[in-house]
Image (cartoon, rainbow, N blue to C red; front, side):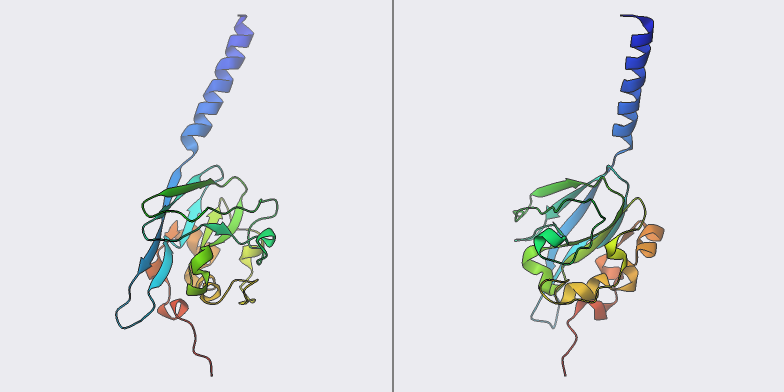
Length: 187
């Protein structure tokens, strides 16, 4: 093999290895937690806000039953709250103790929800690289085709502003204002 070809092949291998090393895997747990004095438990992702880099993978781990990790995407007949160019994605129902993984490649802000538990506030925000895209706008449509019910209040919590996620690296469910985690009373 000529020296130029060997050098080119070596440079390509070094570049591929550098990219592989730079990619990180993050863990997001999916929970149902009873709350003393309330009939309805809390349904949530932990962390509920996360900063990652393009090419990073998130492992969604079901610590309780019947969860999905689903993009707010127009093709899911929902508000479009992922960067332009992102294909719709959704896990199946993840069995307890199992993991579903997704690799984020397009930079921007992603809002994600749990299919069975969106009404109860199970939504989260992931910033990939830098903030951007439709999820940077506040939630205004709380209907079933928008960001349904309590999930809209969760995503509008100031702790989930992309600037906060970038500054902190991650935001815990427990960092949210308790008022963002309960349905407002209707008059």
